Image (spheres, chains in turn orange, purple):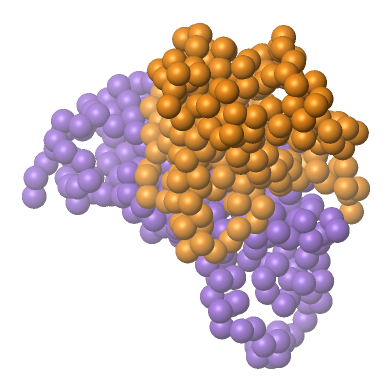
Length: 234
Length: 248
């Protein structure tokens, strides 16, 4: 019997890890989107959410390191699958096409490596912009806290950020369109009937998440930041 | 009976070492009733008459049972039809004047022997690693000694229908052998006779599959679409489930 470490390095083990980490990442982005929507709430909602997260102290670091680890494992395995695939078929077909029917080949599944790499680069830029960016401080409940909300509103008035984010979020939707169903299958979903239902649910969730995320930068850009009807700055 | 002219673009390669290339052939008088392989037989008769090397391709039963005739026809393993092996494909699928591109299955684990023939012994080695049950030989035991529930028996039989053609590997964008290995693992692991060696079998076959140089499974399900006997990718899920059970 292989050790657990060896087992998770096997082809089947790697796939199970990809599914597991993918699932956790989907849960994370659902929470992330819920947090983002605080921008439409009370004027202080977003900054007090940020304050709440910072108040978690060491727990926040545990979450950050955990998340980083999950992300790195997911990306590393994804990239290694791409390299293995090139090794496994050194000579490509002259003509190649899908037979359709039960096949899940399509733009979403065939572009997993591309959308994944874009998301990897995006996450680095995203953290640099919003987590490490220059922020003013505001007083909240008698304590100084980062003014994330103003940074978000300022950033998305720049068309490069507003449209750049929109494009990346469409790619995120494409990644999840195959990814959510694939994660279930990797985590040993067997039933054909359930598989068809989960595929549909996966696509719907992917589309909803993408729309949820890209709505905010576009709304800020076209609404003129604090002038937008749904955003209350003061 | 209508006769067609078919243009062929066939991969020709002397052996594993020499580089291959496509050769163009024009075949007149192709009957719609011919099977795809009979059409290739006609081509080969012509080539032999002309003193040229015939196109080497694998076949045996010509009725979809043996799994020898794995070739990639216009970019699809076994041609355009679902649940159909290349030998069961008929020329009525095509129209007069069509061009058909025929390639061998392309995978590092299936080195080309000649033209459309590839070496699929990698599959044999996966079977050798655990695709069997160990029994004492001797007189055949009473058939109903070990009861098998009907649904389990049906499921095992569905997986057991794998003919080992390698169409799954040929069609997979990653050249993964997960459907083949999954079908063999799921077949034996679902039956009572397969239980004693269940964990050992699953791990050994998964390891051998990787050692042979097949790619990872990305759940494209293209394998299921091209499988001439229609094996479902639930076989792959079964293999993953049994793998997890084996390591914990």
